[in-house]
Length: 385
Image (cartoon, rainbow, N blue to C red; front, side):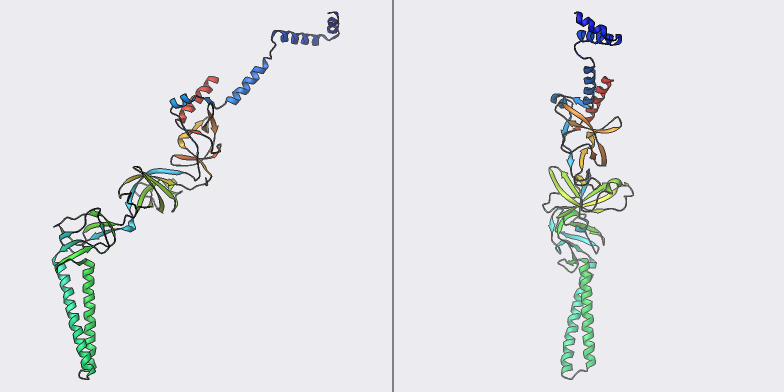
């Protein structure tokens, strides 16, 4: 006891007071008060952007998760319509007017090239057929005269002038017959009678349109049928100008409808906007040899877009991105809930957007009802404030 007092006496007064205060504090509060405050501050820093939710709470909130999409620069999904291939569809019309006396095909039935679709009876048909028969008879007579003159000339009975005249007449008769036959061919083929003309199919395919009935009187050039080769069909799309600028011929189009799906290729992107819709018409070609797709059928098309993303681009649904304090964030799934992760956005395409930085592509992120997580994060920040 005596030694302790001596030591204190030898020390300066200011240092004695400081030692006394320290000794008193250590005895009254053995734990350091500054340490919990520092740890709490560090903990708040670590907890920033974290949302603690159990699996049951996530399910109750309707939050769905998925991994980001990899590759490509995005797709755009929009409605489309199946059309007949413009190069594989032809209108069959009546070259002459008359009454329809026979129809051999109905809607949906197959027809071969050159086969008869309908027979028309008319005075014009009779005139064309009569002219052909007359031309054939004149040619036969001219050939007989030519053969006779050739025999007489060889016997030195007729002069060469008569032979030349006979040869010229035969040539003219042959030309007249060919012209008459071509006129009949332009109108159709033989319809089984002198006053009838058969209307034939210009190509093989299916009858997709019929605008005539038996006994109907039709005018010249009236449309009777539409024949299409449906082994290949077209897909009609209409894109916004900003999206059409990222679609090139050869781009892939995924088609879905009523439990069916297929892949088409873009063959045409219009260089001009449609005057009425102000959209860009786009045509894709679809293989239909199995007959799964019908002309006029509505479908859903997903068009692959090109851009700066490249094949290794990371894409997420637009519903996965939220704005928090002026920055774009995506909620990444953790063991205890979600972590708000800041990302840098790239080009958007349809219902997805490219992530330029912030994600590796292997994370599991909230894709549906992510706005619920944003609201929860806002509540946590308000409570801390």
